[in-house]
Image (tube, rainbow, N blue to C red; front, side, top):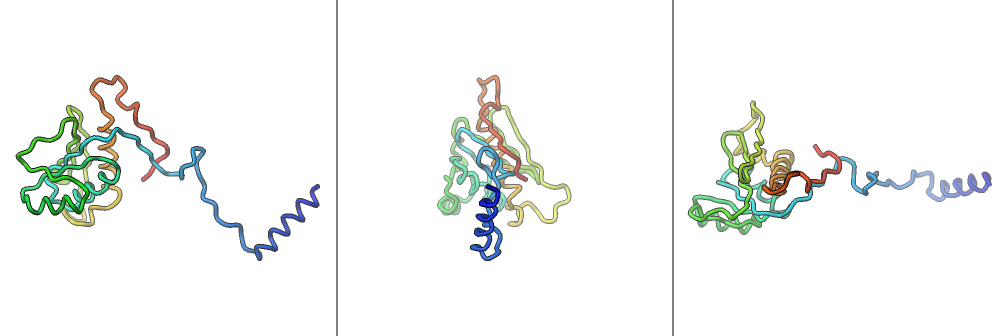
Length: 175
């Protein structure tokens, strides 16, 4: 029996011309890649106050791709309407109220704050920045993903639930 096994393996080795077997990606027991973070959330509106910073436009794109209904405010109505078409978001004139149950994102001096009702979550950028928050380089992956992940956490927040985080499912870690 061992001879047949060894002969079969030797034939496979010769048929591949000495090349190693094709790469198979490693998966977790649930079928996901290691280091992947999955957050399930109830889609809700996300209002971005003053989207003029390039970091905010990257966050709007990522949030819209994640399933949020993204609204943003801007002083220039014509520019806001054009930007809405490119971002997959909706322009909200400053005189209009925010939708009910929305998560709001505001920016103030290197600090991005997410709010929904009485709950708030702040994302602070590095104290010694290489460049200002308005630089396009700040629209990078970690900042954008962190803010959208925080918005998903607040989207699951329900004032009438005892377990606020029961809808959040984390499968792995992604940094």
